[in-house]
Image (tube, rainbow, N blue to C red; front, side, top):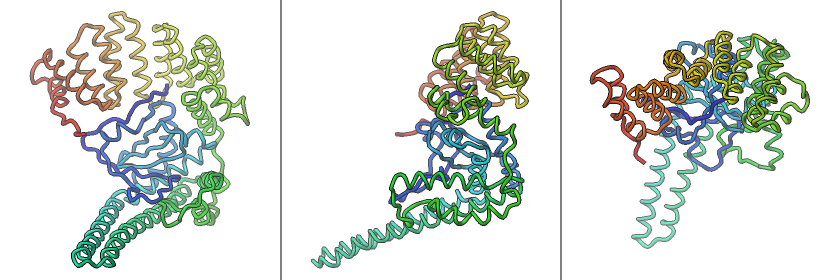
Length: 468
């Protein structure tokens, strides 16, 4: 099931968020923004879903391996945004749900991921930090020189000198900005070339990259926008196509197509995203060329469930289960439908089956299983739900939903100190530090001093709130 939330915090995580293929920065010096994850938590809504995460990870893994980054624990983060975009920070690749929905083939998304891996492998984030610092220094120096000339002109009553000083200040800023933008355009082209190499090394086509750039070129033409090529952070799509076309066609894998199985998984991902972000109308629009596609039927079943027609949704998901009885994600959606029908015990069985079928052992599915057991309300199930949810959190420590379920389970068991501690963790990873500290303080009153749980609460209490 898709779950939406803001990006979680990480005390030590500092990121340079950089835009991938599409954004054209015109006139602003801040082509890249250095922010903490805590700051991002207020502006980057992320999506958690076991099925989508598994698929995108499968897309990225061979690319990451051939780029020599396997030991760096690169994570893929899904962003709830309709635009076709992706970017990287320290060890994370962020990709918008809009990109996943709009890309009709796996190869298009694999090309996007290969480009982002190119940035990571090239160390572009760290180099861009240096360039940004240099650009700011140039702008500051030019500003000081210009202001000095303006002051001298005013003191000597020489208006021409004062005007020249203003021109120096403005000109220095413009030079700094253009230099930085030119540097970033160079990095983008380098990432494109690296991407083509990675694709060839993994026996995949670069055709998807060209398709993506064609999409951007057509979209840009439709807007009638005439961008100054010296005032944008990325090369124009036509320029990128021209630079990559010969290299892409030279690969022996250029005409290789995605496997039918991979294409089917991609279609089901698109159907799910369409249903959750745009409802039934979005599903119909996304599969207008092939309304009987399994992705279309999957999306329709989910949209029907979200629309409140749980009985009709159950019939549709049961038909899909009959077609693919070993698909864990169909069982997962069935569990969600049963929960909506207030059939917690049956839902628990569906989630248990989904978990058993899931070769990836997703913590998200296990959390749902634990939640369903907890909702049955029986003492035995409550104790088991705590164990299952805790084990799931052990594999996914920044999941607010997991802590929320755990707090509820402990509450039903009457263990309020641990319920408060779980609530504190849920608030902490949701970016609500002050609320987290209130719950942590309350939890400490019922926990034995010096125990791991007491120390866990103290860590939250000791966290410094970000000044506004």
